[in-house]
Length: 232
Length: 366
Image (cartoon, rainbow over all chains, first blue to last red; front, side, top):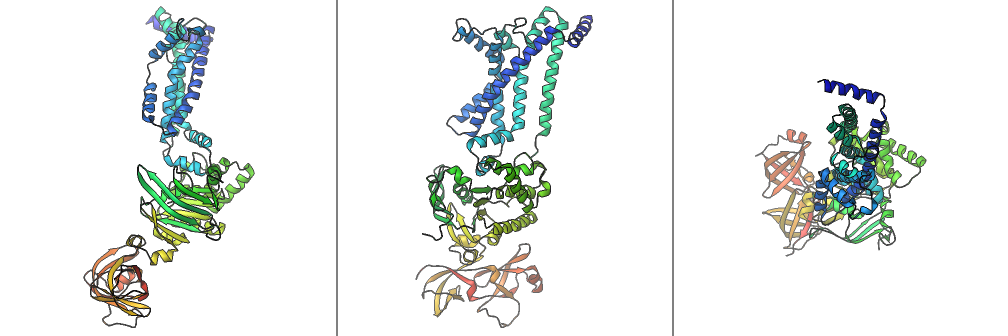
């Protein structure tokens, strides 16, 4: 019991005094996951919308692929990214294994199918005739896609939150491709794993609290979105 | 060559879906300023025709001419679409305020802010929804939403307005009020309109011409009076509300009229036919008068037939009386008349109709 209480006391101290190491880890987490989410948004929304709005042979297969991708195990992603970036691997000459860049890549790969899948579903859920109405108002194809995305802005925002939430709390792939190097590729999740295994519960608890706060924040936004969902 | 050049002309339109031809129209024109309605049952092809005319439905075979110029060759599809506006059965509004919704079409078409504002205010006023300007579209009632959709379409000052059963989802009082407003605005602005409906009363009220459609084709097209009183075949007849369709043989000719023998009874018809010809006649139920007086009074009806009331069906404001006069005959009477004459099933009455009220639908030859 003493262990826990001591840990909690020290954790609060670290947080309240803005301990530089803890802050550094937090900032890196936000940076890496933030950029990864941004990339996943760019690719995910455009491809998701494109698949939702077009008709092509094998569409059903593509949709199921995207849906499968949403449940991709992060460690498998970590495995494949590691293999590709390995010294003798196909992209080894970039020498980005064990760098934040590799983490961004892995996290983007994890988040993109999630964003894609939610965008696809969101657009498909809009009334079929809405597309016709927009075209009838004289819109070009691009204008139509833009308007449809605006109409689906609530589910799209949920996609952003889901994507970000998924990667900021991800640990498997991040350790594998990042290496958890102090001050360089150490993020909230990977640091927590390490400090816990060493018995440094004060730092671990501090990091855990930050992660919890972030998760809470994300869910707060998601709940707000849900409550605002139109009851058409 | 039709003079003046019709605003819209369509030739050899054909649309196929899954191996079935769902639309096949060899020729259709719309005159500027006219209101053309398309009536027909579900699946008749009304929606397909509207969507093809607005080039929303691709692919299709055939040609469309706007003011004499072919769309696709001289007009790009986008330019052509920007001369039209379309309103659907569902309001299909955007998740924003009423004002922004009405402005959305203008925004898409790149109209300036000032002009947009002016036109939106104009339409909000015209459709009586000015007080809803800042309301979210999500909070509108069915009638208000459809008004917003119409305002959005009219704000574009379209050269042709296409409407696909715009009032089908509204309750009767809302529908009536909207039809009245729409009629007024169409006449005022002299907008050309093509609208689809399965409500023949709506069509009668609003249109200059009615096209009756079924299974992808136009069966008959003409003024409401023409189509309602002179349907070309049984389908059109029953769709426009003709209840009595009889077949008989011509037994006598008298100058401008002839007598047809139907089940042993003689019916006088205004028109021309050959002796011995089989004719198919139709009589609108509104033109049949019933009487319970024993003797013939001074009526101008030459066709008076005693008969028995087989069935009375209430249609709300009036009653449908199915009679057996030797041949089946249907009459409509008001609730008041029903009471006045104490009509009841089994009762014997006299049914009469004028010779002019009988339409010869078809002559099947000798």
